[in-house]
Image (cartoon, rainbow, N blue to C red; front, side, top):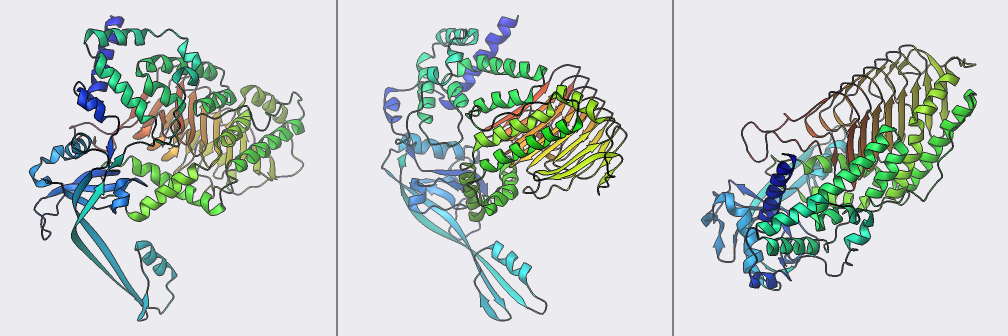
Amino acid sequence: MMRSSIKIVLILSLLMLIACVYPEKCRESDAVHLEKTPFLGIGYRVVSGFDKLPGVETNHGLRVAQVVSGSAAEKAGIKVNDIIIAYDSVKLKDREESKLLQSFGNYIKKEKAVGENISLTVIRTETAFEGKRDKEGLSIKNRDDIEDLLDDQKLGETLEFSVKREAHLIEIVATLGEKGNPALEKPPENRLLFPEYETLSCPYSDLGNQLIDEFDIGDVYLDLLKRYEDDEMESDTFRLNLFRYVHRDPLRFPLVAEKISGDLDDCGKKVDLPEIIRYGSNLLDESSEDGQAIIGIPSSREPEAHLSFIRNVVLSALTMRNRAFETLEEEDKEFLFENLPLLIENGFETDSTEAESEEEIQKNERALRLLGEADYGALLKSAEILAQLANAKWLSDFRGAMIDYHSPETHTIRGIGGDIIYAEDTGAGLIVIGGAGPNRYEMSPAVLIDLGGNDFYGDGDDSDFSENPLSVLIDCSGNDEYSATATFAQGAGILGTGILMDLAGDDTYHSTRFSQGTGVLGVGILADLEGDDRYFGQEFNQGVAFWGMGILIDSEGVDSYRSHLVAQGVGGPKGMGLLMDQSGDDSYYATGKEPSSYGTPGIFNGYSQG
């Protein structure tokens, strides 16, 4: 029965794979044509509602959402928000609206060739701004300029604005270029990328090849692989070798997934966070061998030895974190901190009919450029060093050394209610050790270790990433409540690392977005070792990563995971998202926020759960 199920799944997968990319067998003339694929270089979506404009005979068109840098479209002067209503002799009013996207793309691929011209009729809207300050003319280029003027307006000043929007029909002729980047060096063959996978027996691959022969689709499948191979020649800064491997040999994907899952599961059973980070670093094409050495865990029962260990770990991790961004100016880091979450959120929007503005495109391009300048090896090494504080054996020794510790001075810290047995302000931030009784925390030190009790953890004052690039929160025991209304909380990292570890107790986690083991250009880890736990989030949480790592590990107990969108094991560009629950009768829910972008009644978008 199991064998039959696998066979059915592979049949469906093969047919869908081939249908999506190449719906019919390749004719000889098509194969020749594929050598150089004509490329205009735009992203577009269907829009409607402009048939009342003068000279416009159609109610629908293709709005340009993106213009690829250096492409034929950019050279011809096509702009974001242009609306294509005709191409060559084809008028979109004569096409079914539901088939517009496919028909335009197929026309270029099948009817045109590299070097040929394509004529486009487009609607271009232009917005003109005029303004005066106390009747003196102002230079205004966009909405941001207006907002700046309003922010700077002084008492008694009079500001006047006028906004005029016009639409024009224009003709554009573009000379089609070639898709891909012929100058890009061909990537290594699969056998060189991951030789360890090549030696493993793969029953799925054998069965897949058998089905390809059985359905007589060998030529089509080979053509599909050729297309995938050609696609690897396109420039993509963040494409991972692991993706290249399975992209070029999709029948081995189940084997690779099983191998990686098994390796990570072994690390998870030991709750060896540094080892998980090292393993993930290799998956993200970053070596974990170079950089600062891992600091040895103290064997002494003297409190000062353990406190010194904490200081050294945090300072070493901070040094590596700063190295990761040393080529970026402070304003660049602030820009990424403010705009990366927006860039990610916009990537999952499905109900917007408006294309991105020129300003938004420029921000996205700047963000991608800066993302390419970060030292990810140093960033991940910083997280690996910091994760030594989440070592269960050391924490047991530390608790034993500190449980009877009496500080020579009384510590009172705003935002903390309860017993504080130790506090120290270091070059890497504040270190706080809470007592074994019930405490209430409403601030976020660099390191907070609570020795026990039923505690409450609220929002911390972590709005300035430059003040808190590293954060460690460890609770040793008790039934605790974690509640955060702010983003990037409960084991989340942006331009740095955030770790939350709870060793025991039935705990509840409430958060909003970018939380509970989420990394954005950083590493976020939430590890709960015991108890029946409940996790509640909204979006972008519970093991999610973009340009970094997001890890949620729960070792024991009957647990419940609730979120709505982009949650529970999601990896974005150069990201490893991991949700690992080791045991228990658990439940997972990730839906219910917005209707499916396919329009299927009763179905919601999810983008979740692997």
